[in-house]
Amino acid sequence: MRNISILYPVFVLAFWTVLVLLLVPVARFRAALRREVGVEDFRFGESSRVPPAVSIPNRNYMNLLELPVLFYVVCLIIHTSGTTGPASLALAWTYVALRLVHSAIHLTYNNVIHRLAAFATSNVVLVVLWILAAVRVTASA
Image (tube, rainbow, N blue to C red; front, side, top):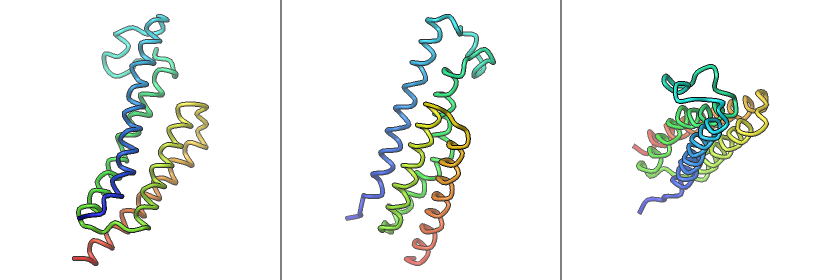
């Protein structure tokens, strides 16, 4: 039986992505009720009239669907190849923690420098996870 522990960070990040997705309609409906936006403001994405409080949750959701795809893929490679180990688990959990921090910054006080630091660090962790996976999978072949 394969070690499924590498899938736990995958589940956490996927769950977080769904939670952020739920913020998008909430922000849009609130803005619509306040008459800050109308249906036409979303016809081709988001118009320039859409206030930041409405566009930021959507942008954060899109961020969670971009590079994390590579995280999901590498975790599935690690799992299916049976190469889960303490280092890959630590890197996976670190990546998820940094993505949660990035989202928290983006969705709250939105300091660009702090957000960039979390984002850039998470990308470095993701690259290291890919390198580790590649080395372990090729070594076990």
